[in-house]
Length: 118
Image (cartoon, rainbow, N blue to C red; front, top):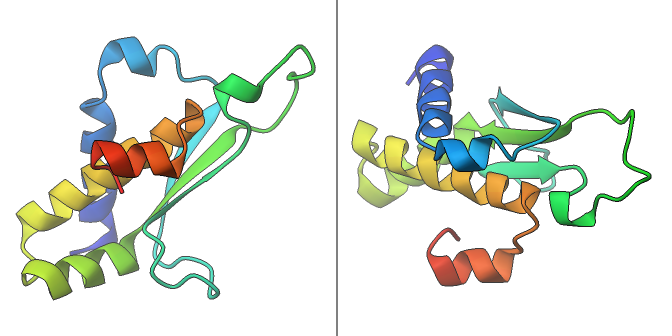
């Protein structure tokens, strides 16, 4: 799958987030990178920033939070698990996008795993 096709899947996953949630997202940008940091080669996505639940009066004039979805490990994982079909990539991208947006809302990994977004 090309980078452009993968970026489109990420955009489509973002479009499926309910509008009542996207309206609440504040100061966050979403990126696609080919590979994660070398110290975590299987990382599918990463949220970097200050969750909405931790922002206070001090939160002003800061760079946007950053959500990154990693193409390489996503494609490799889907290939291992189901032969690399497009449907598997679509599903995993959607899970990853929801997972990272949930971090923006202050939901931790334990709760996400319990909800099936591990």
